[in-house]
Amino acid sequence: MEQKTYTITIYSENQLGLLNRVTGIFLRRHIDMESINVSKSEIDNVFRMIIVTHTTQKWVEHIVKQIEKQIEIIKVFYHTDEEIISLENSLFKMSPTSLFDEQAPVQTIIQRNNATIAAVYKDFYVISKTGTRESIEQLYKELKPYGIMQFSGSARIAVSKAEMNVSPLLNKYEVDNQK
Image 1 (tube, one colour):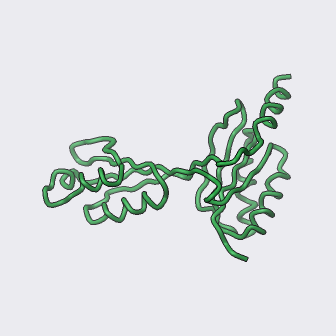
Image 2: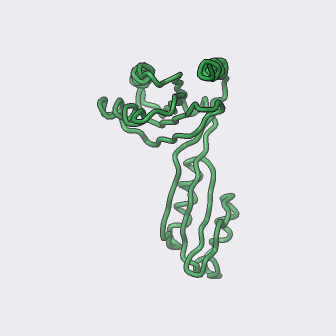
């Protein structure tokens, strides 16, 4: 069966140990997580976990069923890359000499890649880039010859193109928890 990249979106209560149990499901099945992001959702007291993994549809369906068995889980969805809109963030710490070196086209690279200079200090400056993983990797390749001192990239954030029909469920959850 063909492997694809899947984005799994988990709506849950914020309970101690839940993240550990969810990641344990992947660990027991020897399935790598490319990234994981936890944040608030559109409903108060409901959190959204976004996990990116590369596996088969059979395995992602199996994982989703296992995650949904956790008591604190409200709902789980999975999507292929074609079914979502996603972004990642990155920061590049660079030597200050590369910014002002006329032989180094760093300023042109920054502009061409729709990146920005987030901070400038005496000993370094920081470039910020938001975009797809591919666009961030492209910027990384272009900046590498000019001395990247540090690089940090975020996990994927994503929303589905189609309605996930989670809003009525989350609204019910919110009403039930206010009682």
